[in-house]
Length: 193
Image (tube, rainbow, N blue to C red; front, side, top):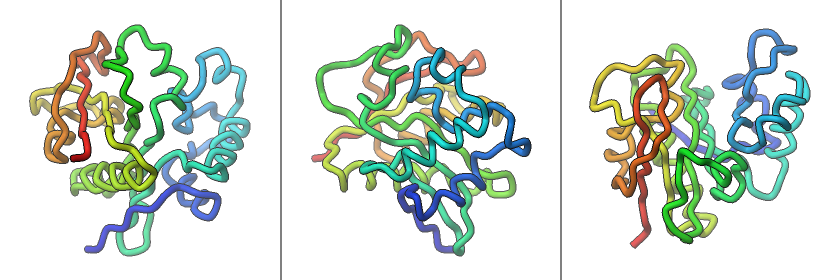
């Protein structure tokens, strides 16, 4: 079972849509834009508008994240970009900025049904780190749920878990006052040596 992780670009946008698009195209689904925009700006976009914004990001100079493929079939998505590109993180009162280090942030995982609980999030995180480091990142950060191994609803698993980040070599650097599904979130970092 070969897993290939690639940037989400204009050429792979249809694959990204296979992971993120809602069944009803008019639905104002997130399209993984909620961290990138203010809630007011996001609220002004309907479903097709959100799709269009993500398509623009995929055509930009820095792709908005990575896609995982198993045997040439898209299985998941991970949003990773410089923290400075995420409006909500830059203005967050619950996920603090640790220091002035120019970090890249991993903010979202989506694994398609039928491929979950098969290690795809691990592959996505590994690919996200490689993607960031290839673009000059020396520090990559994540904000996962610290669920201590307890089961989580897939509705809240988009943040990843502390254990997922620890398996990838990340270490906890700070607590947050953010919660996902009632579970506290922590700041995890991986710094290149």
